[in-house]
Image (cartoon, rainbow, N blue to C red; front, side, top):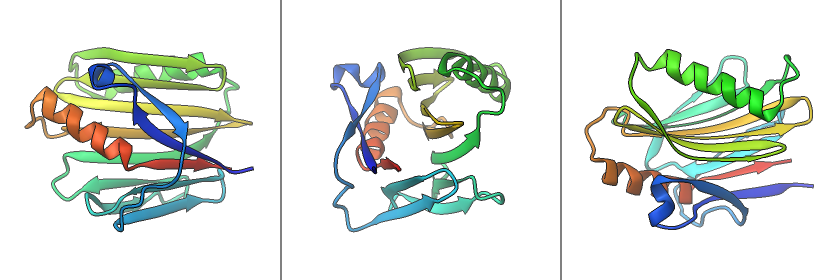
Length: 175
């Protein structure tokens, strides 16, 4: 059975705090692009007019799409759970990767949601907003990441608005 996941925001006030994924239809925008991954059983619909620089990984585990100015990056990829980790253990590893990849930039957890088979988090990493949703499906994980204000030239409020807009136009379908 194919589940279509729609990313939306709880509320304007909660925008800086968190996000959820709901069932829904793909966006109706005529500039929607689609990337599907048969190996891990997912498809990503995203706003191709904004995120127009597409890079498929060499091993076909996923895709990264960037805005022309490099200020926004959306990634989705699958990977095997070779360590047999729980969602909580995967989250701790995710935090370590964020810490090691951001040259000591301050990290502030704005929202975190856990279930048995997924975590969803919004972080402020320096001036950048980092949204991450990781889902455990059988023996592998599927992760969706959206980074806004990667260049650090937007206000926090503008970053929030842009992140919400991009998430509203992004859909992850998992088979």
